[in-house]
Length: 421
Figure 1 (cartoon, rainbow, N blue to C red):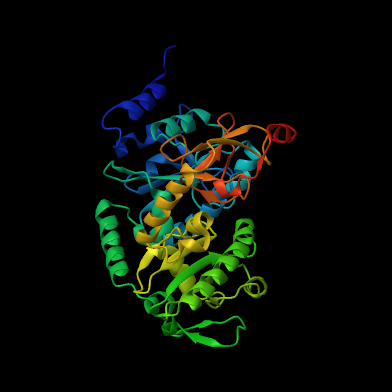
Figure 2: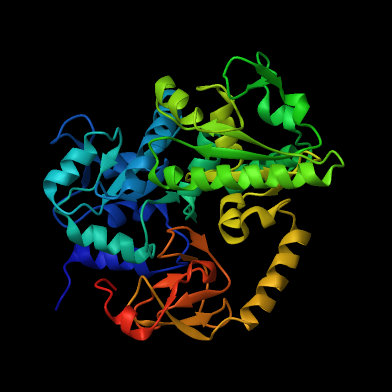
């Protein structure tokens, strides 16, 4: 099949030269088609902006879709960053590359967007861009620089740094990383949890103010959670139980060692916060406190529930507190590398005593014991719906996996009667 001139230009733009470089002189070939030299504006359905008007700007190619919740969540964040940058006169533009299923979904999603879009009907251009940038998941944000260089981790940078990431150059990002390293090196509980107008936390009654300084020299978990979040609703009762067990264990030992948790709310209103926090036995930041957003950005919290562990010295021990609680329960305390190495060795020894295969009450097929180096890896337990890693019982036929502790052994006949797989 012979290509027309425009198709030849597009192929040339997508294949010539360094695959990580995109010259601005090729911008039209990347974003245009044979019958289109424009993008859709956000102002009206039919308003158009010439692609040539983007020359010299920092451009974000935004691969997204209305049907996928993580895209909708990121879209809200990106809108805030975009509006701040454009109101400041920054030379920045975004082009939406849709993965929506139909025109109605595309139009509905685009109504929320203050930036430009490739028309939904231009399937070939969208496919070519997805191939060029090897887009394997959404949301995905590619940053195109006026000098032709590209950056692929725009979503992470927006979540992590917000408007401070602009203009997304390597020099700017290294500056931000250096500042981040300095902040973490000088991190204390006081500078994490206080602001000029508040040096306290709320206790369970929500009337008594507990000084942040009272947590110094304790191991502290920062619990990012919300009542509306279904995984949070499942994890919170487990965390409450583990919290009490850790506290009881430490009281029995004596020596002044202590553990505390601070609720960092993502609730949508005061009433939801009050109701949810009323179920918790630990401390909390006041609802809507500005430090909450700062903490989420500082620790790069991209999903909840999330449990950040701070050591007695005020430094971050791990961001994987939730996963460690799921794996080791109260034994995970104090969450240090030394403790985790010990637990991993114990798990290896325990695995040697486990049956190599077995039948589980919740699955009809035989499950095989696997490890991370032998067919296993990070997984979501199909029995308790929580994270797991290391050893697991896995169905080699369909991928069903459970924690060894969640294994409820039954005979093959009983397993065969299970209706779901």
